[in-house]
Image (cartoon, rainbow, N blue to C red; front, side, top):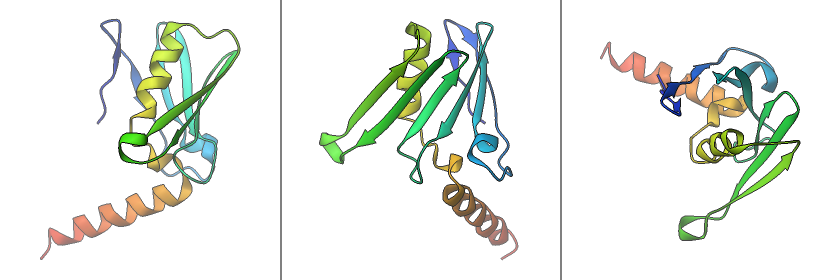
Length: 118
C-alpha cells in the first residue's frame, strides 16, 4: 500500500512477505529503467542495503530521539537517484524485511483480524 515516486514518475514496489530468506523478503523497486532491492543486512531492521547492478549502498541508523544519525556506505558508481532512494528508505519502517519483524507483523495482523469477530 506504499506509494513512491521519483522525478514525477511512479516507482513500482513489490515484496514477498512469505519468503524464508532475507533476499526473498527484499523490497523490489523499479524506476527509470533500473531495478533495486532493499534488504536487511543484520538481525535488526536498522541495517539495510539498497542494491542495483554495480551499486551497493549500505545504510544504518544509530541513536535515539534528537541524536538519531544515519550512516551511508557507497560501493560503486552511485548517482543522485540511488542516494535519494537510500536516504528515503532510511526513514521508512522496514521491519518486515527481517524474519522477526515479519513474524511480529503476521501475529499483529492476525490478532487485529480476530478482533473483527468480537
